[in-house]
Length: 115
Length: 118
Image (cartoon, rainbow over all chains, first blue to last red):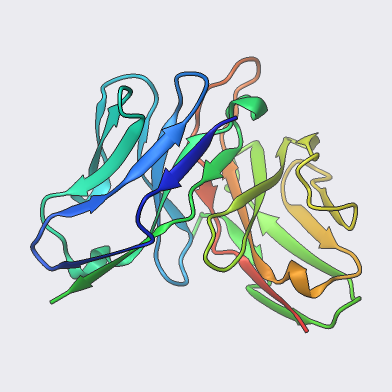
């Protein structure tokens, strides 16, 4: 079965400093992996996705993630945090038991950005 | 706004009552999904439709939960005899779908319906 583990429940950074949100995955097959962001009172939004093409994936708002098979990791990074980045971030893997249609979410990481 | 919409946004009910939530997907999307998100957790997949066909429902939490998508457009999720443990955010998502084989298409999520069972 597929699963993801987000290693930090809460990350705090200062505006202008780098962001690192960590995610490890478990999958019997080559997985499809995603990062979603959830702002308060707004719907989940896809940040980026990995589907077995380039291992370094660029997303919206300056975020990127690197797929590392040897480490079973898919960490999310951003060089410089903005106040507007404060939100809940979810690492997600597609559920191969459901032909990849269902998504399996991690528990989330709350990103706080201080000025 | 042509995104996924959900109604109502909030629902407060008493234990034992039935509730129904509605989801209107993006118009050209033929796949529709329901998820549940409890406090401090990520969303949990419940069921999905390809057009009007419900292709997976084994992940519905109990037989008190049911979903329909009668004309392949909007969908409803009903919870009968609600319990306090049903209190959660219920999320709907839609995507384009392909027939035969897996091809990932981005799921677009609605804002959710927050259910509180007293």
